[in-house]
Length: 457
Image (tube, rainbow, N blue to C red; front, side, top):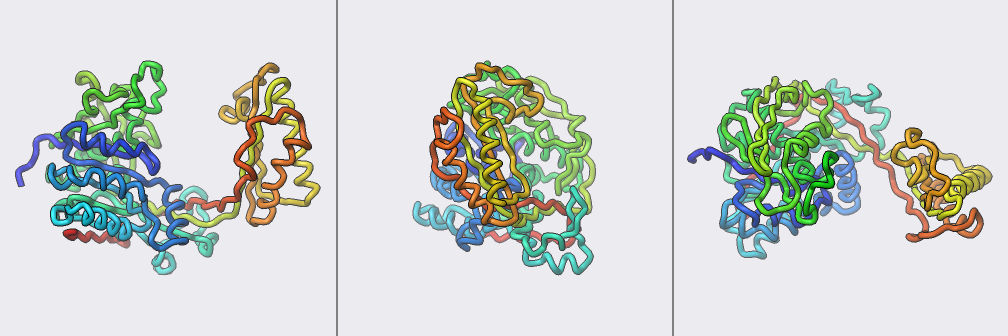
């Protein structure tokens, strides 16, 4: 296969629930070679696992199926290839759903789906611990045995290697479970340019490209802090595109005529997102040194990125473990002027005294006054006495469901048995929700093996 000089990789989703029009707009708005769709975060894996436990056919990002259905002609006829971790905790079901929509569209003979598995460690947890893998909490050092009975999911972060294998085998659509956000972009680059998986500078460059794309429009004008008022037509925002070259340099841009902006500020803000130590951005594929990144304006909505240095991959993979912790509920009431803040505080006192009188015990009761201190806490300073309205937001969490359930019955009565001027109360009684907690751990790389299966629909 003749290697391209430039590969155009477009971001189509930054998280599960992102703008559903973005993938179609990226495909129809101009020429691209790859569309990468990132759906997963730690909390997303927990939600998907809960869905899967209730219904074995669920556990993947269902939005992905409808989005792919709309762009199937471009995949089949124009050669656009799709790489996504939409498979979540059930990539097989996700692949089966894509198979169905392709067959229905009469395009099955033109499309090959790759299914990437191997990240799910839940069935192996006990044997891994028995073999000497502690899977201790990275933040606290606690042993996994402290929560083992409550564990609901455990997924290793795979890198780009299975994506490369899938593309090498001719897949048009690559569906994975917990492959890293950056691996979705790095995989196509390694496949296209034939990069060595141990050329650490190139691996770092592809990793940075993936990091810039992973949050969708956050690097093309969305959620931009600097000069946000100058960002035009966010209702029509263009998602970012990376135009990559074989030497590891690339340009960040977007389709012409779309809203938003690609400039040094927008790219920089995305670079520092979830960065941690700028010298060591660690992924399963290698380590990128963000202090070596050079940005340069290369025209309207074009930022050139170069100079990136890298270091060898670690001998460990990160594991995202989710476990059931308990229950929570959150209730809100809005109090209006005059004396809005004083009324909200008085209502909180009444509520807490009633909960105490009932003998209810919680792990935490958290009160926030939205409009006063919910965002900035003690840094907010004293509220204005003339503040127009304050939302009282009270949340509780506990190990047992019953006390939390009873709490949900104590919010609405405050409307007529508490301070005056509640307004905007809607939605009825607060809902009790299960708390899924996060347990980050490490596992030896050699104990995790990915599997790639490519089939013609």
